[in-house]
Length: 198
Ligand code: SF4
Ligand code: SF4
Image (cartoon, rainbow, N blue to C red; front, side):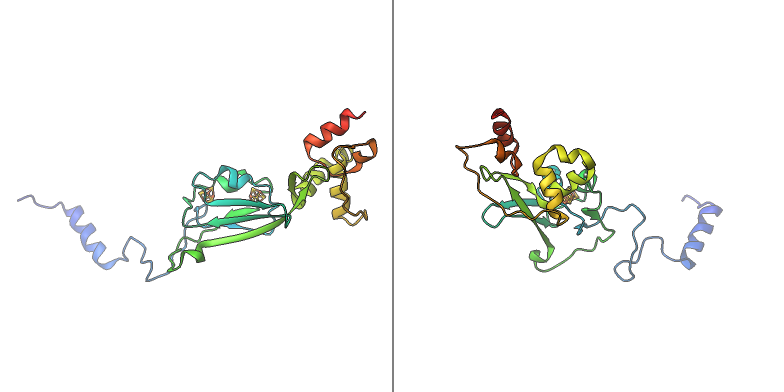
């Protein structure tokens, strides 16, 4: 029989009277370490650009655009999430989606694991194509500063958001584009067609 070393015996006796090394969760609450990648969560800062949905490897973020309602909706399905953090990393505003330290996500109803947010869409006034969300265009205009004035769609979106323009949306005839239509909110394709008008 192998005789235990004195040092091992000492450790064993010490372990009997010390607190257990593993956490006692769920008997006691557990606070994960700083940087723990827990439950992702949309925040109000989200501009609806769609980058997080595009990079999510497990299709946990579903984006759907409704032209009729002019709404872009996101559904974050936590039961599909693998907590990789790619959505947070790709978010241009950094805090549109964040990973909390929440990890105890057990529920009886999967619907409780869905977070939904909506953002208003802006459509091309010539062809009706989706450009992006209103908040996204304003964010781009803000980051470009004075350069945004070189692009009518960004300029109009930026000024409109600040209440500096009073402008009703108007329908432009796609087959009868004129130079005046340059002052419309347009998609890249229609802007190209308008530029060809000289
Ligand atoms: S943490 Fe990863 S899997 Fe979860 S929503 Fe973000 S990108 Fe998708
Ligand atoms: S702003 Fe961030 S959270 Fe919102 S859609 Fe874009 S990437 Fe996702």
